Image (cartoon, rainbow, N blue to C red; front, top):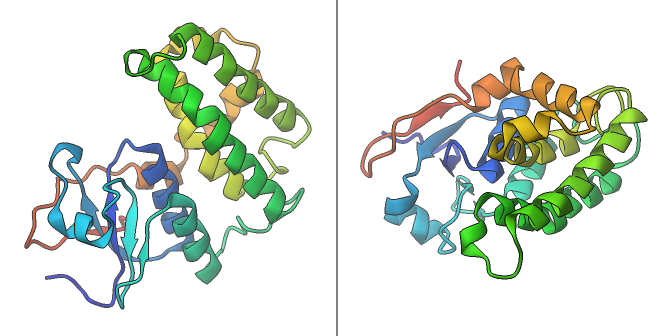
Length: 220
């Protein structure tokens, strides 16, 4: 039975937006009930809470609904931020939010066109790949001056918010990605995907069924 004191997170394991939300929830230690969604058969409970029909969705006790991944990250880290993700070693929170906006508004559309070229008539996969690569080269330059993470030597909000999308880009053509002139970016991505925090965020859950309790998140 659902614990009414816990937030309910509707998630899909492979979605980069859901990954960034789960990373922040795990980093903060916020306990919630995770409901793994089958995107072809979205639960009515999720659609009732958030008619947009995309994940992640976090339903708070009292029925407040957070429908955007970044809002979920900022909410949970605003409650508890033991890793100091909101206080980067270099730059400010506003600087990080600007980089995340560039990822979401400039890089993500090219990622979609690169990964799913048949869905778009306005560009080729190769053209989208090259436009996406421009953003990755900007990240490489930032890492070169930042001692290993995007805003200094210590990971912060921007790293967790951007990394899932870089990971998805890298998975489209792994050999090509590995051949590109961004060794620091590859090392940064490898470090994140090998981390215990990422492993916890990517824990596999069975699809949730209406009427059943969801899974405890983050996993022990």
